[in-house]
Length: 468
Image 1: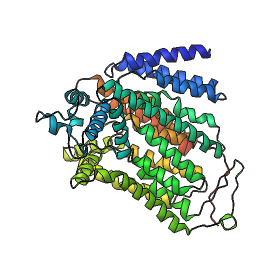
Image 2: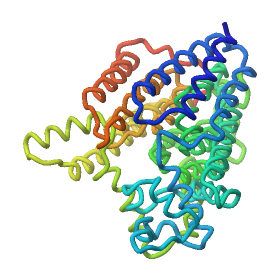
Image 3: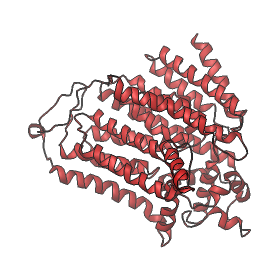
Image 4: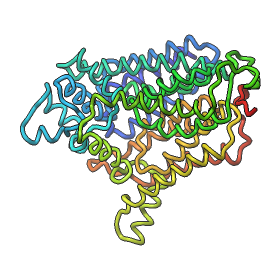
């Protein structure tokens, strides 16, 4: 049976990679649903054979190696930014459109890249942080004259990051006394293979650094962990939302023993050169802040902050895609005011998310490291539930956090998120709100059942924070 499942999976992935357009919605949904069912069955059969699961996870990724991404146009901007840096331009200071509209072509294949990314992307300043830009530069160095060559280089970088996630993810799972095969709910998931390796979204690289930093922090190596956490932020900004949640780790003075049988220990008995807790927390935040600023420093210019803030602000005041609570708020705004109140709603959402993060940081007790990971999962879930824009690949971070916490709603979301691609089935890229509603009815239903109705069977382990 297993060979049949693998062969059918290979066939589906090959069709997905080389013979599918995102406008072919029915074909897209059928292929994706089939791949998800095959993934579930394969992982169920092989959960005790992590070596074979590893070969399959990366073998499936290898099938995409020569494929041009078919669900996203973002990679054209990645290539543009990398080549711009190699030509001596600061990508944060210029829009693509500012060159093309004046008949200027500062890099090779400029016109082709402009047409590929689309006018919306081309009209905005880049928002990709410096480590992400480094990946684009590497693609430009090795394949500066070929779009496909650049795609292959970036794909290899993302696949390499997945190897890192496997390595440190298994170590962290092992330290938490969680079965290590659970990492494959992330690595073997067709959502991750297609959206990250296939369509070149660098959440995979950000997640590698995030998991690595969490492993280091769990081992008590919080100084190096802070540096690695900053690397994660310098790929994607989203880990910044987790920073307040580390308050209890440091202020409650956690300490772990580095073995599977670690127990609650008294910090006063095991501390050697234990700095005051508040000082540790400040140093940890300072490490992250200084490292991040250091990585951004080469791109600093007088217009940089305004341009970057303007672009990031688009996710709160302009862009709309696959939202849930925001769409309800928008409808209420239309009903009472007669126009889209996104500018006001976006600011209220940002304030609401900040309040929720602070409540989780200061009022939700964390007694174990899994409690910290669970808080991270809930904070990010709340943000995406309220956000104006939830692109499918955003869910990848929720999925990796679910591996360490036992919650399954991100796994379900990684299945039904494919419904959001119906927006590309028409020429105007118009969303069908009934379909979006179906997606969120399923996700919210599973979330409510797991969090509020079901007696959560969470992973049992005996790593504890020390409150003494």
